[in-house]
Length: 240
Image (cartoon, rainbow, N blue to C red; front, side, top):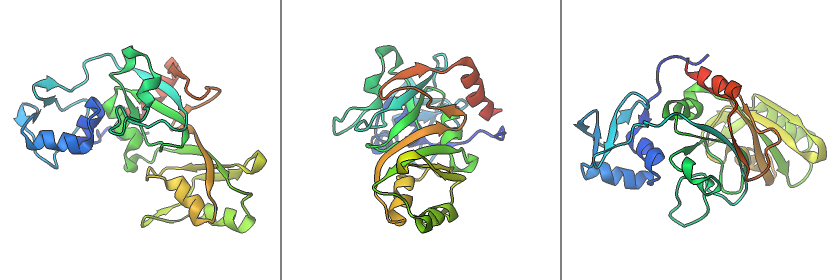
């Protein structure tokens, strides 16, 4: 069970999540004195608690006042996991109807990766799911460029240093047609691809099939659905 202590988040990251601005653009708004936290002028480096602190940008309240909403999306490759993209690439939000455009994606999936993505407006839950200290498990199915040898499999199982941090899978096992299933808690960028590369393999496909208590199931690429009540209860129980 997750501690009841609410996680904090960098102010510029919160603004980016709630508006679709880049973090740098959000920082510029803070520098221009366009941001207030709890009616006080904000400053660079400030942290806020989603769901508790009131954040305003140019007089507009960024604290979600809409009913909380939770969607599960099967992200296809070639789609960016952001609300907007400066290079005008398609984003995950372009796969959703207009009435869901106030939501934001939770967790990293790089451009060519596929699979489970949570879309919500629950900022507090987003921080629990992505903050390293909560060690939320994520499962990926990996297609390497060739069959993984026994020594390489043992290397992956023992864990390794990735970007100066020891990464050891919670679980790893072989699947049909040379695929692997890898479960980790790390949220480092490209971490599974880097693990495979360090073991001597390129990754042809990478599909996230589980994120915390949520499972991708039979949802096809590009499809989405609202979470079932039991799924909502499962993810919100992380906050209790």
